[in-house]
Image (tube, rainbow, N blue to C red; front, top):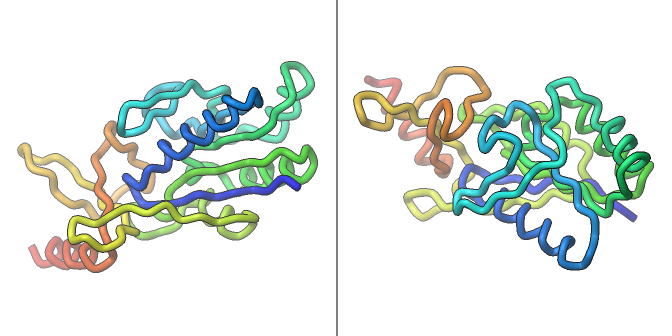
Length: 201
């Protein structure tokens, strides 16, 4: 029986690397794998790219209000059957789109593996992540390490000001790594220390 998976972690926890590894595990067995990502993810254009430089072409870039169920149904009808669906940056999906992924699992018996962040740089859940936590069959945390050596669970947004990277604790929820800002992954203790230091300036 197919399942809906959510593999989540902080920045630099190897989410995209794991997705690429999973793709090749299926591909080497002659299976059809479909790769999707939300349109909000402007990084690497229509591709997905890990920090190591490994890259895969996506089959579909999902518009912000695109119906994933209809996209998949049309693909199966007009292109080919699908053995697995991989979704990168799933935190950017809408609640409705996550529900559509669940319906794909249930109605087409296709496993769907989503990769994404748990929360934004201000410790708030993304809509897509929240819905995945609510309805995914399997939740798996991918680990990252903080600069202090502890497990990193928080995302720290950094803006470059006068050549120096400065932590930022307010702003828009969506700010793409490497395009709008830079990020680091830190533990809660380090995050709160940096936030207090910022507030006391």
